[in-house]
Length: 258
Image (cartoon, rainbow, N blue to C red; front, top):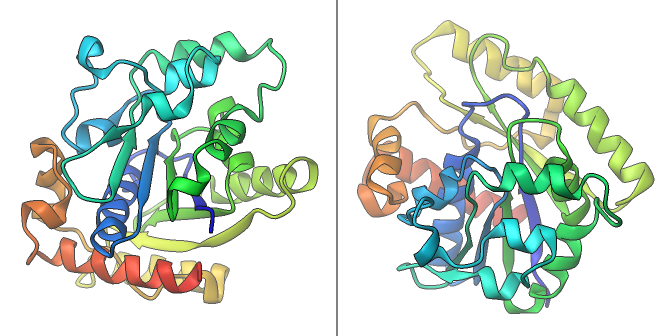
């Protein structure tokens, strides 16, 4: 069985996109699923979220910059992390320049798909952390994926921009990847004590219906602290609310992708 490929995206920054990618991969790996996290965001937050220094270019070797410009194969950019079954293909800020570089080149939209196809049989899941923008990198991610996972924060303006993202998804399906599916929407930064959170969650459910994941990701101090220590929340404090939420969410994700 070749890997299920999921891109994690929202064009709005700060919605828990990278947190969702990192922690879902951590719990997939804990569940004995061979998992690859591809950091495809020039900010490189997923890379540092797994404890890898994105500025230490010597130690990093090849990254997604070289993969996307065609100077390296994906398998040569993959790092085994300290977590069993979890690998990472890192990103550095250089990836932003690479995006500009490939704009005028051939096959600019399918580079990531071709790269992933070369390692698909080595994994059960490949998750791609995409940049918070509708860029060439994002389109590459959508074309390379079987599923799109959309984290939406339960705050004001949450659904702004989502319609545009879904339009882009439809375009990609029509022109390049007809089998792309919306895996679902996960509500993040949820605080059940505030009426705003409850109201936004209600809106999300009204709009996305069954595609809304039952598990909500709470606002949680331990969850916010974990990235600064370069570890997933499950390794930082496995008894925290944030860890429990991502563990439950990952189970739900596995069910949906069976």
